[in-house]
Image 1 (cartoon, protein in one colour):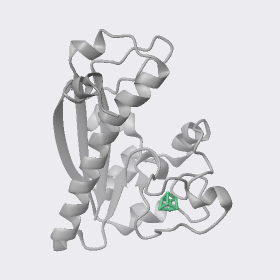
Image 2 (cartoon, rainbow, N blue to C red):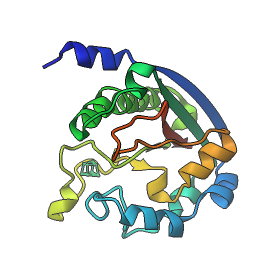
Image 3 (cartoon, protein in one colour):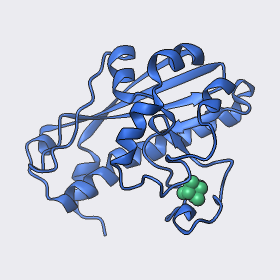
Image 4 (cartoon, rainbow, N blue to C red):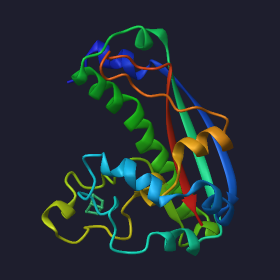
Amino acid sequence: MYNNRMLRIEKSYTIEKHEKTMQVQDYYENFVDLEKTIQSCKKCDKYGKCWSCPPFNEDISDYWKKYENIDLILLQLHYDNTITEEIFSQEDIDTLLHLTLFNEKTKLLQSLTKKTRKNEEFDDSMILSTGYCNLCPVCTKIDNQPCRYPKNKLYSIESIGGLVTKTTEELFDKKIKWIDMEKGKIPDYLTLLMGILY
Ligand code: SF4
C-alpha cells in the first residue's frame, strides 16, 4: 500500500538524459569484450538462470555483426538530499529502486519499444535493456523450458559483451556510481544505459 514516504521517494529525483548514435562496428571494436563481461555475469545470481543472460548456446557476437548502427541512451536519476542523507535498510533500498530506477527503466523500455514500432528505420531492430530480462515473473530457463517470448526477450548491453562503465565514461563523460549496501547509502545519482541495434 502507498504511504507518504513512498510518495516522497517518487518525487525525490530528476532525470538527465543523453543519447548517442554510432556505427556498430566502431562500438564492437572498442566497447565489447565478452570475456570481460562474462566474469562479472558469473558473480550475478541470475547467471545461467535467464535466457537473456550468459552462458549462451548461440554465438552472441552474431548480434553485433547483424546490425549497422547503435543508439545508446543514458539516463541519470539525480536524487535530492532527502535521499542522499538518509540511511536505508536493505528492504528500503529495494523499495526505493522499484519506485525510482526500475520505474524509469520500464518507462524507457516502453518509449524505445514505441519508437522502434513507429519508425521503419528500426524494422528488425533489437532493444538492449539493462540487467536481466524480467518480462516473466520467473524465467523458464530455471525449469529448462523454452523462452516464452523469444522474439521479445530482453538482452542487456552487458549480457552480450558491452562494457557499460567504459561506454558511460568514454562516450558520455559520465562515471557510474553504486549504492553502498553496507552503509545503506544512495549516491547522488544512479545510471541506466540502454540501446537499440538497427
Ligand atoms: S521472456 Fe520470459 S522466459 Fe524469455 S528470457 Fe525473458 S523472462 Fe525468460
